[in-house]
Image (tube, rainbow, N blue to C red; front, side, top):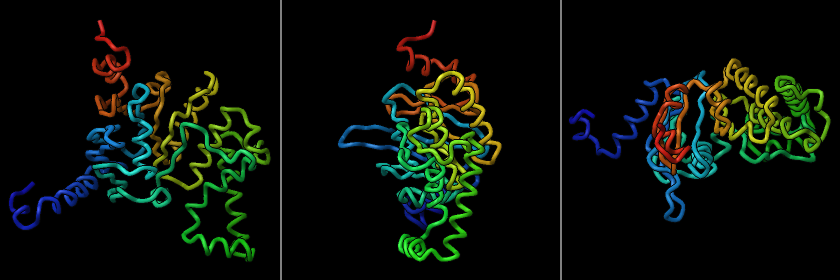
Length: 284
Protein backbone atom coordinates (compact mmCIF):
# COMPACT_ATOMS: atom_id res chain seq x y z
CA UNK A 1 0.00 0.00 0.00
CA UNK A 2 1.46 3.43 -0.92
CA UNK A 3 2.41 5.31 2.30
CA UNK A 4 0.95 8.57 1.02
CA UNK A 5 -2.51 6.97 0.74
CA UNK A 6 -2.68 6.10 4.45
CA UNK A 7 -1.67 9.64 5.33
CA UNK A 8 -4.72 10.94 3.48
CA UNK A 9 -7.24 8.27 4.50
CA UNK A 10 -7.38 5.92 7.51
CA UNK A 11 -6.20 2.32 6.98
CA UNK A 12 -9.63 0.79 7.62
CA UNK A 13 -11.02 2.96 4.81
CA UNK A 14 -8.24 2.26 2.35
CA UNK A 15 -8.08 -1.53 2.81
CA UNK A 16 -11.60 -2.40 1.53
CA UNK A 17 -11.01 -0.10 -1.45
CA UNK A 18 -7.74 -1.84 -2.34
CA UNK A 19 -9.34 -5.28 -1.93
CA UNK A 20 -12.10 -4.30 -4.33
CA UNK A 21 -9.60 -2.99 -6.90
CA UNK A 22 -7.62 -6.21 -6.55
CA UNK A 23 -10.74 -8.33 -7.04
CA UNK A 24 -11.53 -6.47 -10.24
CA UNK A 25 -7.98 -6.51 -11.61
CA UNK A 26 -7.56 -10.24 -10.97
CA UNK A 27 -10.60 -10.92 -13.17
CA UNK A 28 -11.80 -13.55 -10.69
CA UNK A 29 -15.48 -14.41 -10.80
CA UNK A 30 -15.45 -14.94 -7.03
CA UNK A 31 -12.81 -13.66 -4.62
CA UNK A 32 -12.82 -14.28 -0.89
CA UNK A 33 -10.43 -12.52 1.47
CA UNK A 34 -9.75 -13.54 5.06
CA UNK A 35 -13.06 -15.28 5.65
CA UNK A 36 -13.58 -16.63 9.18
CA UNK A 37 -16.63 -17.95 10.99
CA UNK A 38 -17.17 -18.61 14.68
CA UNK A 39 -20.15 -20.21 16.39
CA UNK A 40 -20.33 -19.31 20.10
CA UNK A 41 -16.58 -19.47 20.52
CA UNK A 42 -16.07 -22.46 18.20
CA UNK A 43 -14.05 -21.60 15.11
CA UNK A 44 -15.48 -23.22 11.98
CA UNK A 45 -13.45 -21.32 9.37
CA UNK A 46 -10.15 -19.50 9.79
CA UNK A 47 -8.89 -16.71 7.55
CA UNK A 48 -9.63 -18.33 4.17
CA UNK A 49 -8.58 -16.70 0.91
CA UNK A 50 -9.91 -18.14 -2.34
CA UNK A 51 -10.35 -17.17 -5.98
CA UNK A 52 -12.69 -18.87 -8.44
CA UNK A 53 -11.95 -18.24 -12.10
CA UNK A 54 -14.76 -17.96 -14.60
CA UNK A 55 -15.13 -20.98 -16.85
CA UNK A 56 -13.19 -23.37 -14.61
CA UNK A 57 -14.61 -26.29 -12.64
CA UNK A 58 -13.50 -25.78 -9.04
CA UNK A 59 -13.89 -28.25 -6.19
CA UNK A 60 -13.72 -27.92 -2.42
CA UNK A 61 -12.71 -31.06 -0.56
CA UNK A 62 -11.74 -32.10 2.96
CA UNK A 63 -12.59 -34.58 5.72
CA UNK A 64 -16.01 -34.52 7.39
CA UNK A 65 -16.32 -31.49 9.65
CA UNK A 66 -13.71 -29.49 7.74
CA UNK A 67 -16.10 -26.54 7.28
CA UNK A 68 -16.98 -26.99 3.62
CA UNK A 69 -20.76 -26.48 3.84
CA UNK A 70 -20.25 -23.61 6.30
CA UNK A 71 -18.05 -22.01 3.66
CA UNK A 72 -20.79 -22.35 1.03
CA UNK A 73 -23.33 -20.97 3.50
CA UNK A 74 -21.21 -17.86 4.02
CA UNK A 75 -20.84 -17.29 0.27
CA UNK A 76 -24.58 -17.58 -0.35
CA UNK A 77 -25.66 -15.49 2.66
CA UNK A 78 -27.27 -18.38 4.54
CA UNK A 79 -25.06 -17.38 7.47
CA UNK A 80 -22.92 -14.29 8.04
CA UNK A 81 -19.14 -14.55 8.16
CA UNK A 82 -17.54 -13.32 11.37
CA UNK A 83 -14.76 -11.57 9.43
CA UNK A 84 -13.68 -11.31 5.82
CA UNK A 85 -14.96 -9.98 2.52
CA UNK A 86 -16.59 -11.64 -0.49
CA UNK A 87 -16.48 -10.17 -3.99
CA UNK A 88 -18.47 -11.40 -6.96
CA UNK A 89 -17.64 -9.96 -10.39
CA UNK A 90 -15.59 -7.31 -8.61
CA UNK A 91 -18.49 -6.12 -6.43
CA UNK A 92 -18.68 -6.81 -2.73
CA UNK A 93 -21.55 -9.06 -1.66
CA UNK A 94 -20.54 -9.50 1.99
CA UNK A 95 -23.62 -9.29 4.21
CA UNK A 96 -26.21 -9.43 1.44
CA UNK A 97 -29.31 -11.57 1.95
CA UNK A 98 -29.56 -14.93 0.14
CA UNK A 99 -32.14 -13.72 -2.40
CA UNK A 100 -29.99 -10.66 -3.17
CA UNK A 101 -26.97 -12.88 -3.79
CA UNK A 102 -29.07 -15.15 -6.02
CA UNK A 103 -30.15 -12.14 -8.07
CA UNK A 104 -26.49 -11.15 -8.46
CA UNK A 105 -25.83 -14.49 -10.15
CA UNK A 106 -24.93 -17.13 -7.52
CA UNK A 107 -27.11 -20.18 -7.06
CA UNK A 108 -26.69 -23.44 -5.16
CA UNK A 109 -27.90 -26.93 -4.33
CA UNK A 110 -27.84 -28.47 -0.87
CA UNK A 111 -26.16 -31.44 0.76
CA UNK A 112 -29.59 -32.73 1.82
CA UNK A 113 -32.12 -32.60 -1.00
CA UNK A 114 -34.59 -29.74 -0.53
CA UNK A 115 -37.24 -30.23 -3.18
CA UNK A 116 -40.96 -29.46 -2.89
CA UNK A 117 -41.80 -33.15 -2.86
CA UNK A 118 -45.55 -32.88 -3.60
CA UNK A 119 -45.14 -30.36 -6.41
CA UNK A 120 -44.56 -31.48 -9.96
CA UNK A 121 -41.07 -31.68 -11.38
CA UNK A 122 -41.64 -28.74 -13.71
CA UNK A 123 -43.18 -26.60 -10.96
CA UNK A 124 -40.08 -27.19 -8.83
CA UNK A 125 -37.99 -25.65 -11.59
CA UNK A 126 -40.43 -22.78 -12.12
CA UNK A 127 -40.09 -21.88 -8.43
CA UNK A 128 -36.37 -21.50 -9.05
CA UNK A 129 -37.08 -18.68 -11.50
CA UNK A 130 -38.71 -16.51 -8.86
CA UNK A 131 -35.53 -14.64 -7.79
CA UNK A 132 -34.86 -13.86 -11.45
CA UNK A 133 -38.33 -12.47 -12.19
CA UNK A 134 -39.54 -10.89 -8.99
CA UNK A 135 -38.43 -7.60 -7.48
CA UNK A 136 -41.48 -7.02 -5.32
CA UNK A 137 -43.47 -9.75 -3.53
CA UNK A 138 -46.62 -7.63 -3.21
CA UNK A 139 -46.64 -6.77 -6.92
CA UNK A 140 -46.12 -10.42 -7.81
CA UNK A 141 -49.01 -11.50 -5.55
CA UNK A 142 -51.38 -8.91 -7.01
CA UNK A 143 -50.42 -9.87 -10.56
CA UNK A 144 -51.05 -13.54 -9.83
CA UNK A 145 -54.47 -12.80 -8.33
CA UNK A 146 -55.53 -10.62 -11.24
CA UNK A 147 -54.18 -13.08 -13.83
CA UNK A 148 -53.46 -10.24 -16.21
CA UNK A 149 -51.90 -10.72 -19.65
CA UNK A 150 -48.44 -9.79 -18.37
CA UNK A 151 -48.64 -12.43 -15.63
CA UNK A 152 -49.88 -15.05 -18.09
CA UNK A 153 -47.08 -14.24 -20.53
CA UNK A 154 -44.52 -14.56 -17.75
CA UNK A 155 -46.08 -17.83 -16.62
CA UNK A 156 -45.84 -19.26 -20.14
CA UNK A 157 -42.24 -18.10 -20.52
CA UNK A 158 -41.28 -19.60 -17.15
CA UNK A 159 -42.75 -22.96 -18.10
CA UNK A 160 -40.96 -23.01 -21.46
CA UNK A 161 -37.62 -22.22 -19.81
CA UNK A 162 -38.25 -24.76 -17.07
CA UNK A 163 -38.99 -27.43 -19.67
CA UNK A 164 -35.79 -26.53 -21.52
CA UNK A 165 -33.81 -27.00 -18.30
CA UNK A 166 -35.50 -30.34 -17.63
CA UNK A 167 -34.52 -31.43 -21.10
CA UNK A 168 -30.96 -30.25 -20.39
CA UNK A 169 -30.68 -32.45 -17.28
CA UNK A 170 -32.57 -35.36 -18.85
CA UNK A 171 -35.83 -35.13 -16.90
CA UNK A 172 -38.34 -33.67 -19.37
CA UNK A 173 -40.27 -36.96 -19.58
CA UNK A 174 -40.98 -36.68 -15.84
CA UNK A 175 -42.18 -33.06 -15.97
CA UNK A 176 -45.71 -33.68 -14.66
CA UNK A 177 -44.81 -36.24 -12.01
CA UNK A 178 -44.52 -35.33 -8.34
CA UNK A 179 -40.90 -34.73 -7.34
CA UNK A 180 -40.94 -37.45 -4.67
CA UNK A 181 -41.60 -40.09 -7.35
CA UNK A 182 -38.18 -39.55 -8.92
CA UNK A 183 -35.22 -41.77 -8.13
CA UNK A 184 -32.60 -40.34 -5.78
CA UNK A 185 -30.21 -39.57 -8.63
CA UNK A 186 -32.94 -37.83 -10.62
CA UNK A 187 -33.90 -35.76 -7.59
CA UNK A 188 -30.30 -34.54 -7.49
CA UNK A 189 -30.58 -33.58 -11.16
CA UNK A 190 -33.86 -31.79 -10.47
CA UNK A 191 -32.17 -29.73 -7.75
CA UNK A 192 -29.51 -28.73 -10.25
CA UNK A 193 -32.17 -27.71 -12.79
CA UNK A 194 -33.96 -25.62 -10.17
CA UNK A 195 -30.70 -23.92 -9.18
CA UNK A 196 -30.02 -23.14 -12.84
CA UNK A 197 -33.48 -21.62 -13.26
CA UNK A 198 -32.32 -18.32 -11.76
CA UNK A 199 -29.76 -18.10 -14.61
CA UNK A 200 -26.66 -18.02 -12.38
CA UNK A 201 -23.10 -17.27 -13.44
CA UNK A 202 -21.71 -19.29 -10.51
CA UNK A 203 -23.34 -22.58 -9.48
CA UNK A 204 -22.45 -24.07 -6.09
CA UNK A 205 -23.09 -27.82 -5.87
CA UNK A 206 -22.97 -29.27 -2.35
CA UNK A 207 -22.09 -32.99 -2.64
CA UNK A 208 -24.07 -33.54 -5.86
CA UNK A 209 -22.87 -37.16 -6.21
CA UNK A 210 -23.85 -38.19 -2.67
CA UNK A 211 -25.86 -41.43 -2.77
CA UNK A 212 -25.38 -41.94 -6.49
CA UNK A 213 -24.29 -45.21 -8.04
CA UNK A 214 -21.26 -45.27 -10.42
CA UNK A 215 -23.42 -44.95 -13.54
CA UNK A 216 -25.29 -41.94 -12.11
CA UNK A 217 -22.00 -40.37 -11.03
CA UNK A 218 -20.58 -40.73 -14.53
CA UNK A 219 -23.67 -39.03 -15.91
CA UNK A 220 -23.29 -36.25 -13.35
CA UNK A 221 -19.69 -35.66 -14.40
CA UNK A 222 -20.86 -35.21 -17.97
CA UNK A 223 -23.61 -32.85 -16.80
CA UNK A 224 -21.13 -30.66 -14.90
CA UNK A 225 -19.09 -30.35 -18.10
CA UNK A 226 -22.20 -29.34 -20.03
CA UNK A 227 -23.02 -26.74 -17.38
CA UNK A 228 -19.56 -25.22 -17.77
CA UNK A 229 -19.92 -25.25 -21.56
CA UNK A 230 -23.20 -23.38 -21.09
CA UNK A 231 -21.26 -20.47 -19.57
CA UNK A 232 -21.97 -21.25 -15.92
CA UNK A 233 -19.00 -21.75 -13.59
CA UNK A 234 -19.43 -24.85 -11.36
CA UNK A 235 -18.01 -24.91 -7.81
CA UNK A 236 -18.43 -28.26 -6.05
CA UNK A 237 -18.14 -29.74 -2.59
CA UNK A 238 -17.58 -33.43 -3.18
CA UNK A 239 -16.25 -36.55 -1.41
CA UNK A 240 -16.01 -38.67 -4.54
CA UNK A 241 -12.32 -38.23 -5.33
CA UNK A 242 -12.56 -39.95 -8.70
CA UNK A 243 -15.13 -37.39 -9.75
CA UNK A 244 -13.21 -34.44 -8.26
CA UNK A 245 -9.94 -35.36 -9.93
CA UNK A 246 -11.68 -36.23 -13.17
CA UNK A 247 -13.52 -32.95 -13.78
CA UNK A 248 -11.79 -30.23 -11.75
CA UNK A 249 -9.49 -27.52 -13.05
CA UNK A 250 -8.70 -26.37 -9.51
CA UNK A 251 -9.07 -28.05 -6.12
CA UNK A 252 -9.03 -26.44 -2.67
CA UNK A 253 -8.64 -28.48 0.51
CA UNK A 254 -9.99 -27.57 3.95
CA UNK A 255 -9.05 -29.26 7.20
CA UNK A 256 -10.47 -28.20 10.58
CA UNK A 257 -11.66 -24.94 9.02
CA UNK A 258 -8.30 -23.99 7.51
CA UNK A 259 -7.23 -23.97 3.88
CA UNK A 260 -4.26 -26.33 3.66
CA UNK A 261 -3.82 -26.51 -0.11
CA UNK A 262 -5.09 -25.26 -3.44
CA UNK A 263 -3.97 -26.12 -6.96
CA UNK A 264 -4.39 -28.41 -9.92
CA UNK A 265 -5.72 -31.92 -9.23
CA UNK A 266 -2.40 -33.68 -9.90
CA UNK A 267 -0.57 -31.41 -7.45
CA UNK A 268 -3.25 -31.87 -4.77
CA UNK A 269 -2.97 -35.66 -4.99
CA UNK A 270 0.75 -35.43 -4.18
CA UNK A 271 0.45 -32.80 -1.43
CA UNK A 272 1.72 -34.22 1.89
CA UNK A 273 -0.57 -32.07 4.05
CA UNK A 274 -3.59 -33.30 2.09
CA UNK A 275 -2.54 -36.92 2.40
CA UNK A 276 -2.03 -36.53 6.15
CA UNK A 277 -5.45 -34.87 6.53
CA UNK A 278 -7.18 -37.79 4.80
CA UNK A 279 -5.05 -40.70 5.98
CA UNK A 280 -3.85 -39.40 9.34
CA UNK A 281 -0.25 -40.31 8.58
CA UNK A 282 2.72 -39.21 6.52
CA UNK A 283 2.89 -40.92 3.11
CA UNK A 284 5.67 -43.44 2.65
